[in-house]
Image (tube, rainbow, N blue to C red; front, side, top):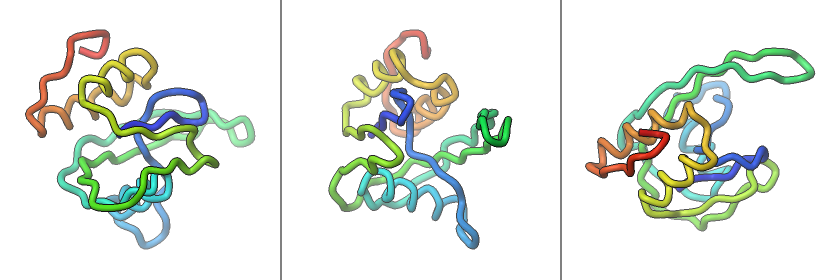
Length: 127
């Protein structure tokens, strides 16, 4: 499952940790809020660090923890306040979309998920 964020880029669900939540709880809550899917964490994937510029407060340092999550239930519906679109797709299609219009910092996340799942990814700019 990949999302199209409000900047029209291919991405993965993520969000801010709320008080009292573990990182895994945050990931599951954000996935459900953004996509309508309830799941369970299978395995941690990667922690990504990057800077984000907010015109109101300046540069913000971000730390995002990604997990391999198994979908259990729910109906796939994007949270339109946060994202434009969400879709289930084959690993091959997901890799092509990441190649064409994804954030570079998601490459190691997808690579790790594909390794865990035993999926060969297509060679391309994200190889």
